Amino acid sequence: MTRERRHIGGAERRARLALRHRLAGTARAATPEEVAASLVALHGSDPATVHLAVAARLADPAKAVEQTERALYEDRTLVRMHGMRHTVFVFPAGLTAVVHASTGLAVAARERANLLRDMAAAGAPDTAWLAEVEEATLAALARRGQATAAELAADEPRLREQFVYAAGKRYEGVHTVSTRLLRVLGVEGKVVRGRPLGSWTSGRFRWAPAPAHPELDVAGAQADLLDRWLRACGPATEADLKWWTGWRVTEVRRALAAIGAEEVTLDEGTGYVADGDTAPVAAPQEPWAALLPALDPTAMGWQQRDWYLDPALRPLLFDRSGNVGPTVWWNGRVVGGWAQRADGEIVWRIPEAGVRREAAGAVAAESVRLQGLLGATRVTPRFRTPLERELTA
Image 1: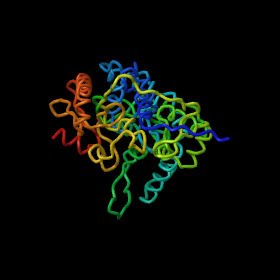
Image 2: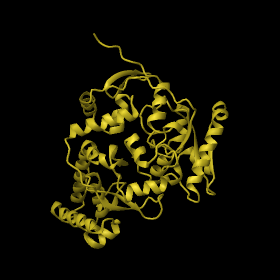
Image 3: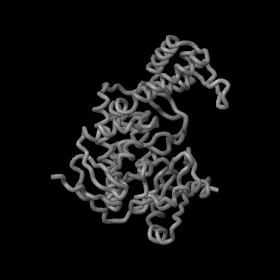
């Protein structure tokens, strides 16, 4: 006899989000490591996102920047590296082997093949030459500990070599070996992003040797990663899982079967939760608000977002490539956006009048929290969105 599948509606999904993503007041974390473990991964494409995403989830955000810097660059309990969908994330250090095997290997093979193809098409030196440069580069990085591309090129001058990419096409350009090779080494799990040049908001960074990790079985690593993600973000549809991981649908289905994921019904159709995670989850007793940064992992966590995001807000809060800007949350829903003006003031807008009246006090308190954290620091999202631009105009 087939057991009837449990239905998990939008309200319960928002309750799970509030608690598991450390956003409700009673669920906030004590350390950046706790935040990262709860979310599995923090978006790392924009350096400021990591620190602000952590701060929004800490019980005491005053030392969020200091603690996150320590975790990333001193204790190395967090690692900034390429992961799902060829995107840079910040992971707990213990997950690096899982991420590398589950998502990095396939991407790395494509990246290396593309580099060799492009160099060959341009008449650049061959594979053996590139292997020599790679070996020398990794040795130089090991000696230095951390280094910029320019510093590595001082040790290995062949990194400065250039070649023409896509000759004769409208997108023709000149690529430097250092730029392409270090990117390949990053997705191959040999190097990771190190300390930034300048403040914690800087997009310029040093490279560092990747932490040593065992080589895992791909299927086993995919099962491990999917189980962790479902326990943080489930329920989710197959489309959500395929989008977040960047895997083929056959890989998603294989991992779901391996972990014994349970089917549930959602407003969007069939969804999945981790084995044993079907029990009802009650909403937090106290209402909560949050100001989350651009590219926050909660706002970007699912492909199908209507259960927490009004479709009417999408044109205001996302850029044309699908990157989310800074968002205002109220009890599990995105209700508006925020920005920091040139004078440091935090400004926000909630378009719906009724929600604005209900949430105004809590949102204002969060803006004061955020303003206290930022102080004299100015943060401009890497991917700017219509509402963020309007609020700062």
